[in-house]
Length: 255
View 1: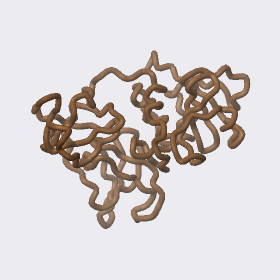
View 2 (view 1 turned 45 degrees about the horizontal axis):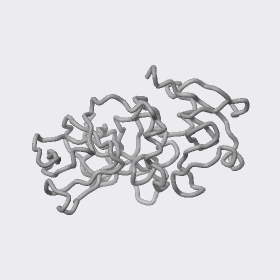
View 3 (view 1 turned 90 degrees about the vertical axis):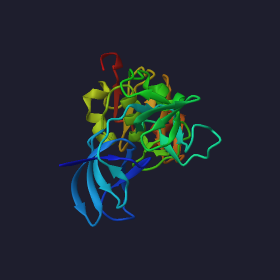
């Protein structure tokens, strides 16, 4: 199988090899993927990050894999043509994007292997310790637009938010609320219906086709079509719109 690496800031993965069909997930710069099939320029790709399979549109930029050195930990990071904020950015990377630095450094800026520059404060080494507080990570996405199949700071959906927050904490799951519900890597199963649960910060709450994260004992952080954004709402209000069908409690100390 051919292995490639995404060089665009991000790219959609679609249900079928044609325009106008639903997006099922998203790839972020630096992620590697296996080409499973090619059809009229469309690539059926398996993302090495989470195993998600979908179709990349023709013309999606990609190259032979190189070893990334750093990861973007800012919510968004602009690529500049020179080592200064005065040089207009030419592209923007999302939280989680992977880059390879080329050794150039000037005035707090670092060079990337494609000849561009990033502010060093936006980056961390790829082998940096996980950010164990997944809720702190998820809270950074507040007011991010809701995008079906999204998992970047440009747009994200409910399972994309959980996937991103937990991955930053060292636990990579699936881009599907149904699969996350069944995934023991996401923590101890507490309840089928949410009743008699003393909710804690960090709990993952499932609904039919939906998922969110508790920021405390009463409030849910989630990406929702109800507001078309990432918001915090009382869990009781969300439960009026959809019935709770599961609760997990992550144990990131063991991850």
